[in-house]
Length: 219
Image 1 (cartoon, one colour):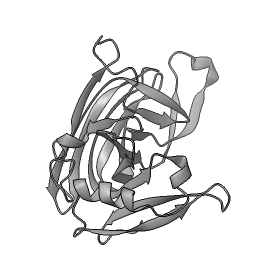
Image 2 (cartoon, one colour):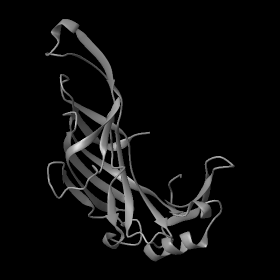
Image 3 (tube, one colour):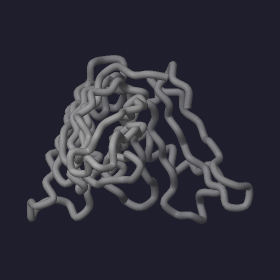
Image 4 (cartoon, one colour):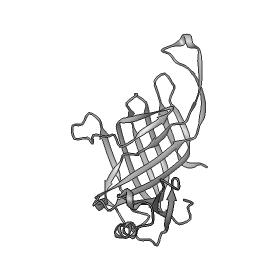
């Protein structure tokens, strides 16, 4: 598995690396029955692993360090208003962007995302733009600095992989619920997607998701 683009990454003591991509994709998540006006947007961009050797100038006595670098960018806590959807199909998140600065008094209380490299480092400052190129593929550009001082920049081509809807009421998640499908239909057309229900979790504690997968992509 690979993706088109690049991922520039540096952390303290390590020379900057420009890495190929392993994966890039976009997933939307919504809930029904709660009167929600928002959708969650998870943009994932994963760098391909690389074994890197370097000497940390801060600790030269430690000698050469060898470590696998594979940073992953993700926007797990990013939300967008449903009213801001650009369309009802594969172009739904065209024009999505954010410019986050943890020091801005008007910034959201929670960072929109993080970089994972051995541990998760929330964004301190980050920018991202998402532009539809056609057929559900998006040009993603992002750059920023994490809470650990790691710097990153990336460009990727990422498909809209799927849209997931679930009922907000846990008691109604045990079986397919027509209210979930009805709420999906208020926002999206089904024509560009393969739509259906998937059961998740264990038999006793499982739940049902209504999933719309872009045609031609495996769920």
